Amino acid sequence: MNKTKLINRRNFLKRAGLATCTGLAFPHVVPSSVFGKGGVVPPSERITLGAIGIGAQGRSDLKGFLQLPDVQVVAVCDVKRPARELAQRWVNERYEGSVCDAYHDFHELLAREDIDAVSIVTPVHWHSIMALAATRAGKDIFMEKPVALSLQEGKLLRAAIKRYDRMFQIGTQQRSGRNFRFACELALNERIGRVHTIKVGTSYGLVSENFPAMPVPEWLDYDRWVGPAPWAPYTEKRMSRGIHENISDYSLGMIHCWGIHHLDIAQWGNGTDNTGPIEVQGTGTFPRDGLCDCLLGWDVSMLFANGVRIHFTDGKKNEHGIRFEGDKGWVFVNRQTLEAEPKSILKERIGPNEKHLPVSNNHFQNFLDCVKTRQSPVAPIDVAVRSDTLCQLSYIAVQLGGRKLKWDADSEQFVGDDEANRFLLPRPMRSPWHL
View 1 (spheres, rainbow, N blue to C red):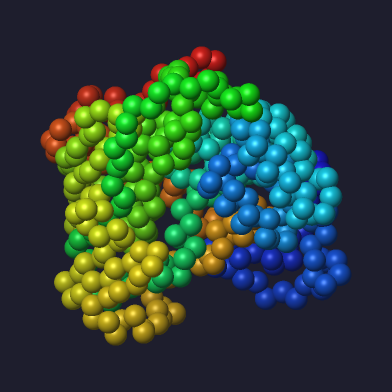
View 2: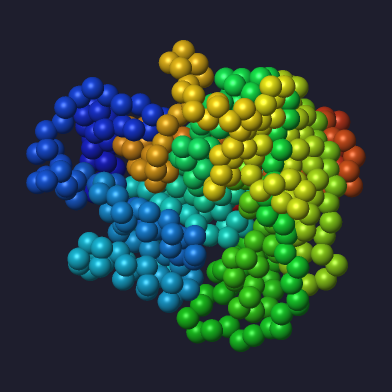
């Protein structure tokens, strides 16, 4: 489907009132004939999607999209042949036909004019390069978190998304969870009094051995997996998600990969989606040896202009989740639990004249709806970069040995600190990869 037909389709769907993004609904009655028999969305009205990255999270996201009627996956891409062949088989079985192509080079997928949107679910060191390429190729983007290895990369992506008018959703799926939204609304509406502290705890870092080098298997394009990162000998453990998310060549570690989840919710409930802290200070510990060299534990404090302080630590200090503390009580939320003091506030409703947050009950559907309507999704690029910034600042504060750093959220720079500002810049990239 060419771009003109896609735009016409989106305009039609917008007029038809099919949007659910940001909790909006329109009082239109749409005849079932619009969708085909039995309410099934015909192929001509589906968003066409290419999936880049079919690891553990990539498979989970692919399954999420395949369950939805108004998207059609037409291509998958991975540097591992078994992974892309498995994904291709899933897609063809889902649609009962040979409808899905498989690639090992994401550029080939992006070059297809019939693809409307892509999902990017790769190691973090690839995120900015792939997302920028997808933006320039005219694709809307669903990308797993974090945004990038440096704040400058995130800012470049944000500028490109706006310049090319692309739809972007970051994979902070907790924003599509009822308990997380409700906990934030309780905090925003002062059901626990004025919030003064937000405690955030996430997973601890990983200690590993130095794994021996191994021959590269014939089914793997290892050079492309390493990509812009420094070259390193192949070992199968390096490509395991639990390992590479704790190697600094590819990641900032759990302070980032897990931190983005819960700090994003802290931002939401603090009402600071469009800004950041004014001060940050932190300490942490690193492994002494082994392939995994990212932070093991950390203790970071961030002060905001509204007087709220976020205390962000590994899960051995603060409980894994987000705890909003006010002068009249508290509310705690994670993926298993919603608790509060007083307990009675959990039975209350947020009134029509109180503060309400955007409603999404399915992160993938929310993205697709907003591809059609061009309205903002629940986790757009501006939110993604601001939440990512909290992780970046925490990491930099630890790297700089615990001294207090002043942050200007408007200019997105440290105040009077050239050493700290150098940490905001992109790392050198291995040729031929570049931003």
